[in-house]
Length: 386
Image (tube, rainbow, N blue to C red; front, side, top):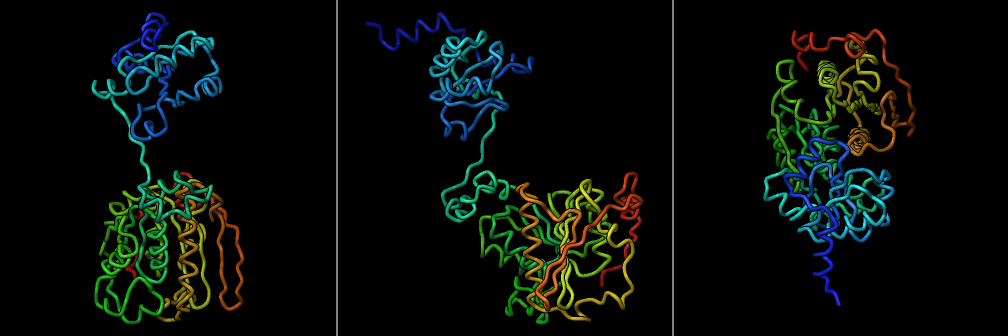
């Protein structure tokens, strides 16, 4: 009666075995060659060979023909040490695959040979607890939560709009949040700027914000930029972030943010508030209009007074800021329909939302084909924000 070891020995005479060096050479030279990982899902998540395909050994016969329908495809099976891959290659031969082999020594030998491998990020137990309600949503799940944790979002302003955006992005687990604001906390801010507290009056807003956000979620990174955004520093600050969220309260800064986003091709999540009304949109280069398509020139000051002059309902920035946060999350997850090409307007007195369709200006000197936002940025054609 034959033992399992006898069976394996007989397979070694039937199934071609190749070294990790040969497997690496073949995969590198022939794009049709498939490295097939037959380890368990937990092993795959821990680390795997780049571009390898994965089917656990127990599901191989069930799934292989859907994954690799061409039975002449060169397939190099591998497992952790070389045993399961030998059995897998033998099964492939029985199914009619004509060019299946096994990698001797498995993934362990591949790593010891110094060849590249990738690790798959997974959530920790504490993250699974914290973000559990996200994990239950099909549109988010573990994959989406990992995207959030890897995302880098820059907030322009830690004021009325920046406060709710920052709180909800931090709570959602956006891994890196940058904040640009040169101002300090003032008592007049506390009516609407919920990041800050009475005992932090006089403190830099970015430092106050960092303290509040890390108290809420110590598992994320807060990067502070206590500077006035200008044509001289905007590119250097923006370049390391995926999404820019504009919570500024003046037109010069909004135009600067827009032009830098057009230049760097970064989505600009825009919000603005005044008295009882607010607006939200997403200006995404290559996908829709930019802010200058909507407002080619700033309106006269008498038609667009600042919140300091005209006032703002303290709760209103919370409504608009949360909508900005939602749009940001949707962009990160690549889910749903964003507000690209749409301006969502909110009237708090009437409790009404209405939407305006926005179209790209084909002659826009900034975002249309042939536009040159870099010229204005480098020339510094912006008034100092008040």
